[in-house]
Image (cartoon, rainbow, N blue to C red; front, side, top):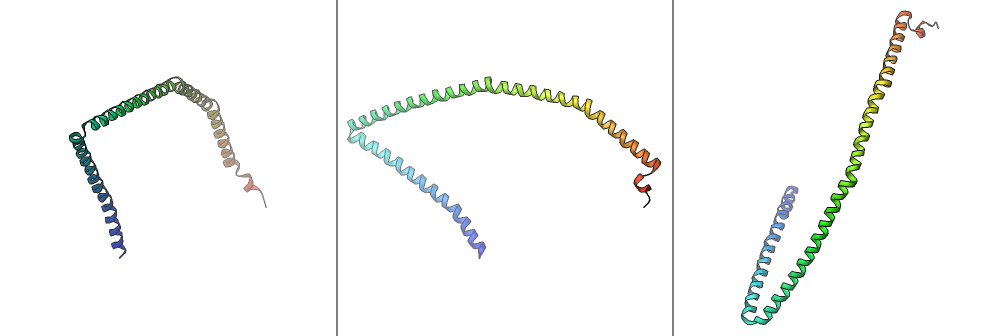
Length: 146
C-alpha cells in the first residue's frame, strides 16, 4: 500500500510540470494570436492610432537602447578596473608570496642540513652507546638486589 502512494506521488510530480508547460505554451500562443489579430484590426480600422502607437514603441526602443549603452559602458569600466586590480595589486602580491616561499624553502633546507641531521646523528650515536653499554654490563635496574 505504501508503494502505491509513493508511485502516485512520483507520477503526480512528473505530470504537474508537464501540465504547466502545456498550459504555458497554449497561453503564449493565445497571446501572440490576440496580438496579431489586434494589430491587423487596428491597421484596417484605426490607421492614425496605430501610427501613434508605432511612434511610441520606437521612442521606447530608443530609450531602451540608450539604457543598454550606459549599462555596457559601466560594465566595460568595471572590467577595466578588474584588469588593473589584477595587474597592479594581485600580481605583486603573488610575486612577493613566491619570493617568500623560496626563502622558506632555503631556510628549511639550511635547518635540515645544519641542525636536524647533526642532532639525529648525535642522538643515534648516544642511543647506540647506551645499547652497547646495556649489552656489555646489563641493565643496571635489573642488577639491583631486592
